[in-house]
Image (cartoon, rainbow, N blue to C red; front, top):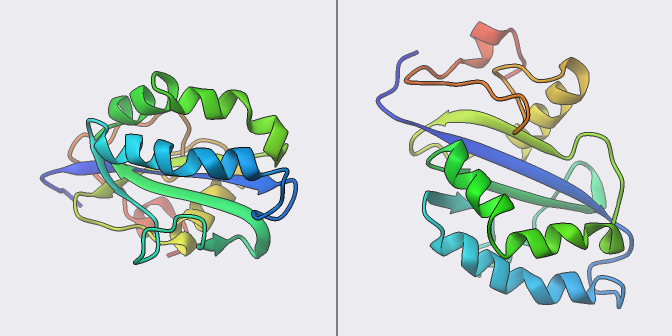
Length: 162
């Protein structure tokens, strides 16, 4: 299906070592608002998952109360990569082992039509697909990217669940 414009959706998940309101995660929680504000102002940023009152931590998924879900949409992979790897966000990434358990697949990227707002359920499907099949046009990583151009592969075309 051809689209005039596509964006890249990303989900990253983290399994917290303790409850979000614990002393162990206090340093991470203190960094949330500044990093989210940085993302909101970053070139290429389109949208991020949060409640109506702006709370990104109140949304849960993956059938685990300790699983933190970060879901966002960006104009391009390059815009996203610049934010992830060349901003103050890297300081948080360097400290992730203080707050989070090691898990297998923790990041998935996929192309969406401009204006599409991905759901947590959609993100879960992408992570599961990546775990089971490795990088494909349906779900991929920074290391193994798939270009969309003007084409967004539909679930049916890729033989993936809706």
